[in-house]
Structure formats: C-alpha cells, structure tokens
Image (tube, rainbow, N blue to C red):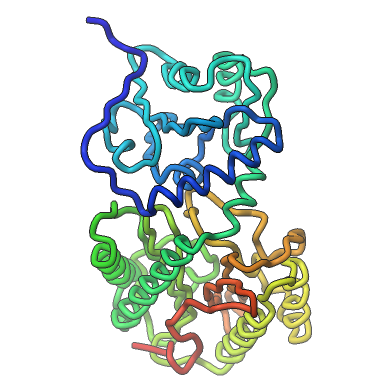
Amino acid sequence: MDRPEFYRFHQGERVLPFQPAEYEARLAGLRAAMDKAGVQACVFTSMHNIAYYSGFLYCSFGRPYGLVVTPTESVTISAGIDAAQPWRRGHGDNITYTDWQRNNYWRAIRSVTGEGRVVGYEGDHITLAQKALLDEFLKPSATQDIAPATMRQRMHKSEAELALIRQGAQVADVGGYAIKDAVREGAREIDVAMEGRDAMELEIARRFPEAEYRDTWVWFQSGINTDGAHNPVTARRLHRGDILSLNAFPMISGYYTALERTMFVGEVDDASLKIWEANVAAHEYGMSLLKPGASCAEVTQKINSFFAERDLLQYRTFGYGHSFGVLSHYYGREAGLELREDIDTVLEPGMVISMEPMLTIPEGQPGAGGYREHDILIITEEGHDNITGYPYGPEFNTVG
C-alpha cells in the first residue's frame, strides 16, 4: 500500500465563529506586517494565532499543529486523528499529515512554503526542537520572529470580535448568578463550581447552537484557598464567615471572558469588610482611569499610590488587568496589554482590558484571605464601556 506523507481530506459544511470576510481582513493585516518585515511565509504553531487567523482551535495531545500563511495561501496543518474537523472549523485550505514516518508534519508545511524563503515564526511558542526541524526541512534564507507583530494586531478588536466578547461577558454573568445561588454553608467548592460551569455551558449552547463546546470552567475558592487567583477547586466545605472567590470563565470559540468577585458566606467581620471596601474602591478608581491615551504603566502607578496611601500596597499580588480575545489559561496572552509597571502600551479605542485589583492578607492577620473584583472594559473614543453586569461589593455578595 502506498501511504502518503500528507493529503487533503475535506468533508461536511464549514462552520466558523466569524464570517469569511473577518478572517480575510485579519490575514490582510498579517500580510501587510509580513511585507513590511520582508517575510515570505509564516509558520504558526500556537493555538491562539492559528485560531485567530483561521478559526481552528486545535487539541494537540502531543502532536504538532500549524498554520502556514504566504502572500497567496492560508493553510492549516493538522494530524490525521482529527480527520476533516480542522477543515470544517477553519478558514482557508487544510492539509492532513500522516504519522507513517517521522516529521511528515514538516513535509506538509514544506509543500506550502517551499525552501529557501524568509520564514516568520513565533519565538514565544515554537520549541528549540521544532525550530531546528524548521531550519532542516524549510532551509530558510532567513527567519524572523513574527509573534510581536501578531500580538499587536490581536490587541485591536474588530466589531465582530467585540460582539462575541460582549456575549461572553453576559454568559459569565449567568455563571455568577448560578454560583451565588449555590453558595450555602456545608456546600463543597466543587459543587458550587459545577453549578456555575453547567449554567454557562448551557447558555453558550443556547446562544451559539452551531459552536463547539469546550474549556469553560469555574475556579470557586473559599477560606485559605482564596489566597491565589488561580488556585484550583477543592472539596473544602463552606463555613459561615468564609471569604469566597467567584471566578467564572466562559470560553466561546477560543475567546475568553471572565467574571471575578469577592464574596462571604452569611456575614463579614469588620476587619475583612475594611479590606474588601478598600479593594472595591481601588477597583472603581482603576476603572475610572481606563480611557484612550492612558498608558498601562501610568494606570498601574496610580493604583499603586492609591493602595500605598492606605498601607495596603504590600498585599498586592499581580498586575491590575489584562487583555481579552483569543486566549485561555493554557494558551495565548497579549502580554503587551497588561496593567503592570513595565508595560508602556497606550490604550486605544477597540482594545479590551480588565480591571482586577487583588489583595491577599496572610493567614493569622485580621481580614485574612484574597480579595478580587474583575470587570471587562472596552476602550471607546470617549472613555470605556463596562460590559460586566454582575454587581460587586459587600451588599450584594454577602450570601448564603
């Protein structure tokens, strides 16, 4: 039997989160950046860039996936285990590589790029081993890191992206209300988290009946487990007076949104209330700063001063916000749009960013626990549009 190195297997109807014109506009922007840099072919390996330029969100399971973009072609490269699904869920062409022999992945890529070209790659994603194979199989005349240019492009959202992100924020609100309803003394973190996750997945299926459903999750934390923003869910049971962190994360076609709130079970003591109210005040102050022309570093320094005046800055644990779009807790990040001291990006209309101050008071001190509020804001010509609807603060979120 003649077993091919790669082949095309296209069947079924194409279903994508955006219209073809949206992807063509993104590719046009990429090709303009390629032309400026003198890049003749891009080989993308990350989930976020492949999804951004093609719509296809891969499941690696140890296999490499790719997207090759030239001035005239856009081709996803996928493993045989996925059959035609990458073509159905992707814009442009698709080539399936086989695993009958090692490195058929790179032979499939070479069939699009040819040899001796100037090749763009993602320096923040491709491994040393895969970069060596790129050099061996494609024999590029030169290589360039194209990742910074793609990140800058992704930071500016299209109207279609903004519409999807708005829906994602509304789904997060649905999860928040489901979590609130599930909070009661004796409930386990995992039980509350499942209520929120199920509510969001059902809402996504209602709003997007032709989508793929995966990756939506909840981190619901209580007591000492609130000290870190990304602490996993446990089976810890809730007690009256516990501090809680509500974290609802719907995922829609690779697009991440979030709702995060401080909560307490039944009652909140005076020391905790003082910290909570201070963090809410920082949250509101921080949101007032998010407008066109402000730099990420400038916003960060102003919130730092706000906390320092209240002798709370030492309890801050991370930056005050980040971008939204094609990203997740296991792939993607627009690191150039984070509210940190070392980021000088200036906010512009069409950017989407969170405001999420967090204070962690160590165990044994009055008010111990992690306090965090989180809203999503779209930067507009006049200022910003807060697309998060679920209320924050002690009056609404002392529950159970």
